[in-house]
Length: 145
Image (cartoon, one colour):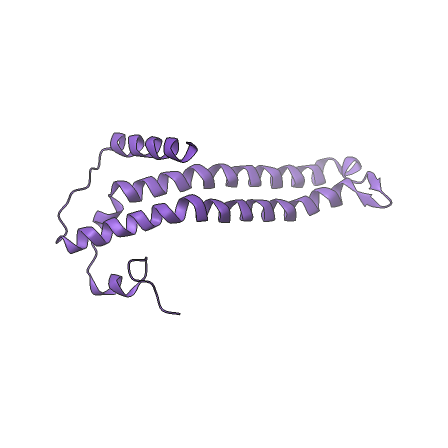
């Protein structure tokens, strides 16, 4: 399958030298990183807390974990199986978020990096964190509308 021109990893990327450090400072790339971080960090913390609670219950509340829920199915088994369900839910949620939010932002960042490479690498990127925060908030408002 041939790569589409203009997409990240396409043939035109190989023809143009891209200053990756400059691309990393671009507002589009910073917005992508900030939006992904706002999703990934809380999701990871939630899952780790869920798993830690399961391990602690298994170790310190064996009577509770051994209680029968239905004909030999115990609370421990239910909580263990919920770990698989949690991975599935978080995985699907991430994929949907990637399709709707992360991928368009990545495309925008890639286009900006390619445009900058075409222009000879003029450093037009603001490194002020306030500018990135304002753009991220504006994008969030646009998505909600």
